[in-house]
Length: 354
Ligand SMILES: O=C(O)CCC(=O)C(=O)O
Image 1: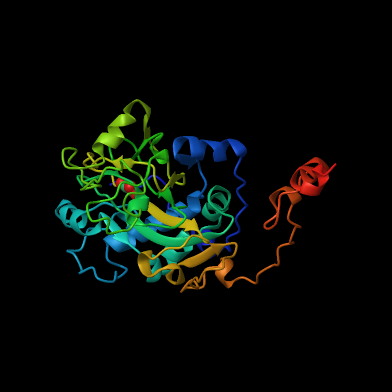
Image 2 (image 1 turned 60 degrees about the horizontal axis):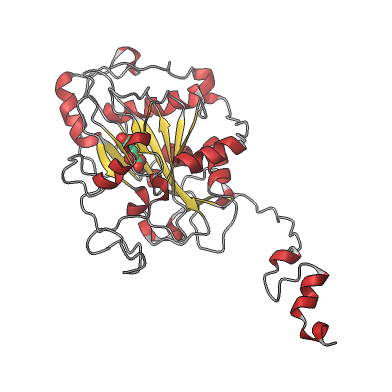
């Protein structure tokens, strides 16, 4: 199995990391809203990608224990222990165990650090912030032959109110059509979330949208079973296949219908690290509620958690008091909107008393 980026040098490993702030452009902001997703090329450095790739190999070669995952037959390390050359007999077992591993940021420092990667948070701050709550991590190993994930909307799984969910998908390996890159139905970010029959995730009070279809089997790779297929197909002329290079990050909105196909290669992994975030002022009951998720940027009136491994982020940094601007007259929070003397006259009955 090939590794596209060289492992980090010992000097790079010990060097303190500094990150240049990434500043999102107006065009990127608009693209995110128009497409439902935004690719930021090379957002994460080669050194950082090499670190997380090495970590996936530590998982594959069982140099790191995972909570709740029983040890597998040991894979054969490649030269220098870095390239992911595997005993073919191990691949099937790995595919079964490690296609996707959830929530390791609550157990492993490195997952917390990549969930709170400063450059990823810079982008989120602009797209869904300024207050950002870091909620979820998934590490996709997706070895050769492993399945994809059928049409789905992430906010269906992770409800936030108001809904501000955003995924950040970091490519660890080159991802393309053959090894199962991401696909998006552009335009579907404007769709509501389609609930299942018992609306068990409580997205909408019943009847809020009069003609909302109930769907079942979101994420099913069988198109005939996946209830979101008719919605996805409606946008077919605007479907986009999104290949990515290591270090690229794909940001995608909670409502956009997206999917990935199987890894059809015989010898290439498709590894990626995915974080899910919302605006820190959205309420959520998911995953233990707001109090269980880390305040990554900004502030909030809602509860939040500290990062367990101390990764620097808003939760553990001293708050700098933001200057409070006086409320503009036009948008005054209370009382009448008195925009001009003419308006005042219009609103004052005595002004017409002549
Ligand atoms: O990486 C994939 O194959 C699917 C990822 C995805 O759909 C998600 O993170 O919501």
